[in-house]
Length: 253
Ligand SMILES: NC(=O)c1ccc[n+]([C@@H]2O[C@H](COP(=O)([O-])OP(=O)(O)OC[C@H]3O[C@@H](n4cnc5c(N)ncnc54)[C@H](O)[C@@H]3O)[C@@H](O)[C@H]2O)c1
Image (cartoon, rainbow, N blue to C red):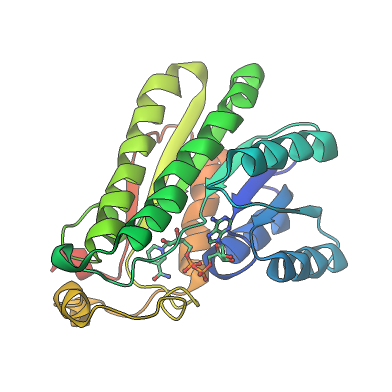
């Protein structure tokens, strides 16, 4: 029940989907949680649900691709809760499954700005606080597309590979300072993620979903929040720089 007692966690993209479930799981384990999302309505409703259940939560509207927003997210967390112990880089968007020949510049730029630059901005702003504390944990939401070649469009695949690279780089450089950085690579999880993509590239979709039947079942948000809880808690204190794949065996095929 108290695996994250007295910890303060920022979870990006926690107004909905996987991030919301991670925030709820952390709050239930005693953490104070920061609901950071660019969808104001969703973040406010998540904050209300959590506080009405007696948990400690506050919300901040942030586009993680915007440096000023990220600075505000971190400074308001310090003002509100006094410290930061955990950063979950969960916010991310899809690329409409565009195969290499069909990549559109605006899609490339949006996905890279959010899924790569946004993750870097959050890590960069939080690390000085972790260094000051002599401890801290980062959980990055990669994807099966971050460890395999053909499970998404070109841009999303490149972006999530970058997330895996950042995960390992930070673990390597900052591990000696008491800071951990790990990632989760979900296969398919039932959220609003796919529905948010429009104008899907049929060729990219067809190629990316070959072998999808090898998943024993689709993931649920709790499958991922359980892993995120383990990676944020002291139970995983010897684990640094890994990627946990959660895909129902899809990549084992
Ligand atoms: N659902 C899946 O099948 C799946 C599989 C692998 C990886 N993932 C990854 O998991 C993460 C969460 O996905 P989900 O399925 O919960 O998606 P979702 O669309 O249900 O929720 C994402 C949340 O992030 C927020 N968000 C998006 N861009 C943002 C930004 N720039 N700044 C702040 N908030 C932002 C959205 O408003 C939304 O509340 C993403 O990084 C995604 O790439 C999802």
